[in-house]
Length: 277
Image (cartoon, rainbow, N blue to C red):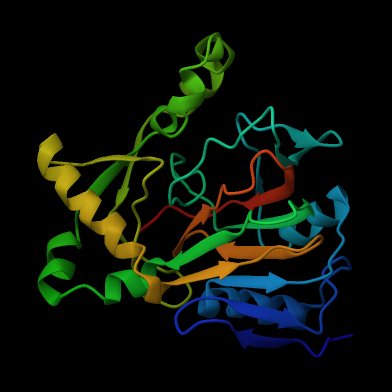
């Protein structure tokens, strides 16, 4: 049976609220295809009132591809594909920058499905930015300059704050060995829409290949500021059992850590993607 799902845009460039679909249940082929194309068009899909158990969360995400297991984050109920992001007074989030998930992988994720479980009384929103709109907003000269460049992405750079803690390097030695630095195009082409978008981020990108450190830093800092232009961004206010499903190939996201010392517990599943081109 096919649902009567609808997509309601939330900004001019990114985001849509999906209604008329229960994602706790198996998707029909038609609903799956509508979501697949809707994700490529809107880049992040928002759902309300979707109380998914860890197995339901895993199964929904698995409809879109193979699932990734995060090398460091804890999992839910013994299900390795379901990551728990639980922050409170004693465990403050270390992520405060714009990023795409796990770009230190040779085949970075297609997307991530994040569900809110415990929400602070105020704050704790998430910002999403369209990397496609950011690229299209550059001048022709900038677009031609960037197209064809590669940048290095690093697991150790992304987890540098964690690795600074006592004993962390020994604890993460295996993850470091399994995730050496990789190079990805600075501009990648979306495999569904064919649109080009920026593919660098503050957490994992370290340097543009072939440039000096100072040259690379100047370019990357400009791109990071440009990508966060308000017109390219939407802000999602979480409620319990809200879900965001974003296209990791064409977006950046950033948590707003304005809720400490309150608690914020989220549950995430990451869908594997293809090699950027």
